[in-house]
Length: 259
Image (cartoon, rainbow, N blue to C red; front, side, top):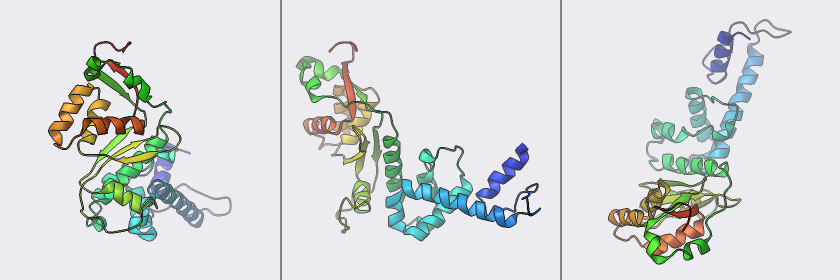
């Protein structure tokens, strides 16, 4: 098939307003509009299904019919560029953020970002999480200089909305109930073993983990987190770090081979 026909064919598949591409034919019809229409519907249905499987909480929030319509508009504007659909929809949250019909649901884009991070964590490389015993063997005077290696699946999402609670309520992890007070929540997403886990972070926790994940020493990360949140508790955050499996190895800032 010539490249120009392929381009028109691909565009028409995801935009029902476009005509059947010129140059197509079927064995029993020189203008196969009906056959192309069936194929186009199947492609659209498959892509909507792919987005629905990645963002089930978002679909539950807005309803199946509305989600399908919103996903259809996204597909029209941003068709997939790869035959691998596991990452299709990574930009869905940015699209929803400017999608006029859901502007009143200001929290929805961040819920979608949380679900996208879950998918990315699921497909990340496997790695054994850090054993708490390794940290206990570090000499006290060396703790401040430790640098941690983040788990390949680790991501941190900060939001002005209670996205962990909203996601949990729309994923059958919590019962639906009024959220009071309505306050921002930060999320840690990681897959230390077989299952992806989502943790709501305490005050300063997101800053602490972000600093560590980008190579800051334990001392510097704690100092930055304490400056960002007066309630930051280093001991509690270290315990949460180890329990979550968010990091895989430790080393000293000045000696990365021994500790």
